[in-house]
Image 1 (tube, one colour):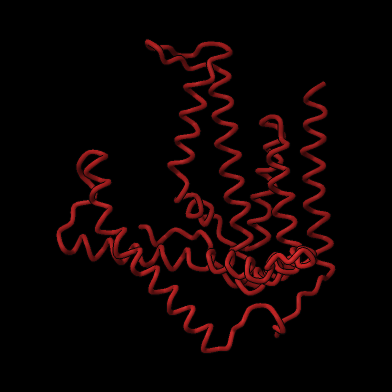
Image 2: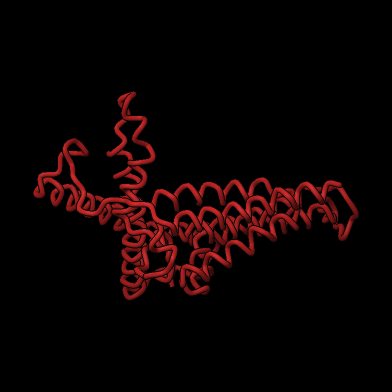
Length: 269
């Protein structure tokens, strides 16, 4: 079911990751992304896999959430794998038919890219799983605060990014309701060719757009009723504070980053 998609959701908890400072988690997420992209081979990527699984275990988020977080990007994963299989033609030929040629290099690259994307989505999802929208907004604003000196509306940007993340689960739930309502009225969304399936999406997209604008209008009205006027003069009930957990979390991440660099160095030799 589409409502099983967990992208952008927050799961309250009391794990080490939940108690870490949101600013540190944002920076470590960036380090994690760098870790995955500097890995030159499957050996270096294995270090990233271990880090992702270890982070999930530390966060106490069920591992089944990995699968749920991957649901929206399954078509992207399949498309990436097929492109690499078809267009990389160097190396030993494993199978050939007419103009299609599958090679060892294509298979290795396809597997490498798929694993990288899976690790990237699963690891990055932990940021929203373990960080509340309010903390995430404050963290983004704090990290971007130097840009205020050049008149960049940092608070507004952080607020928009967080609202966008917050509304992903809401829109997913709204889509599921609309699909259920259309199916109850006899709409067929499962059979037919690609064009017919695309045409069947129109009765879903139009009500979804209407619902999105309605939610946006309700949110704007609620913010106006609470006298919201942007970041100027705004105070915070909870202040972000770093602790010893943030230091240990940073060291933990840096050890794995060093591991990827070391694996890259020794596999070259």
